[in-house]
Length: 142
Image 1 (cartoon, rainbow, N blue to C red):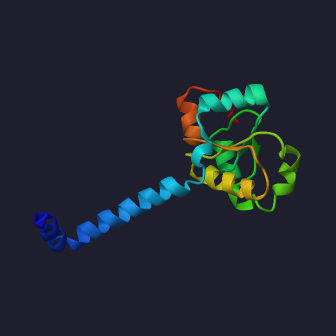
Image 2 (spheres, helix red, strand yellow; image 1 turned 90 degrees about the vertical axis):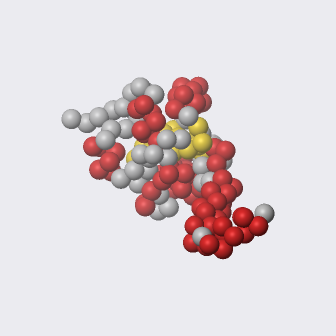
Image 3 (cartoon, rainbow, N blue to C red; image 1 turned 135 degrees about the vertical axis):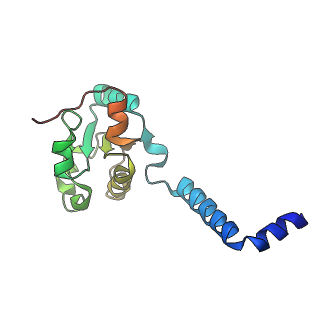
């Protein structure tokens, strides 16, 4: 035990950094925006095919067009989601799958949608990158 205390006192910055990373990791696990509502590309295709889920792509319009998107996806960029919520009102009782490039922005979109009263909101874990990695179709404009 004395060795641990000696190490901690000799390497205060290292121990402080480790503590900060540990706290950040625990905080992220507890308050993950997507949280338990993260779904895999396979689960997303099942929701699209069986539950008529709506795909909401929250990337910028440029990313949506340039990098491709899931077929029939609605594009509302994250920075304009709050003001465009009325466009989604018709989907209030329909499952919504939020998508971005990697799953981070869409997690934030899920939180905003839940606060606005949307109950069936899911985050595509890994985003469009995971979708493409699973060899699922992406529509690209030429």
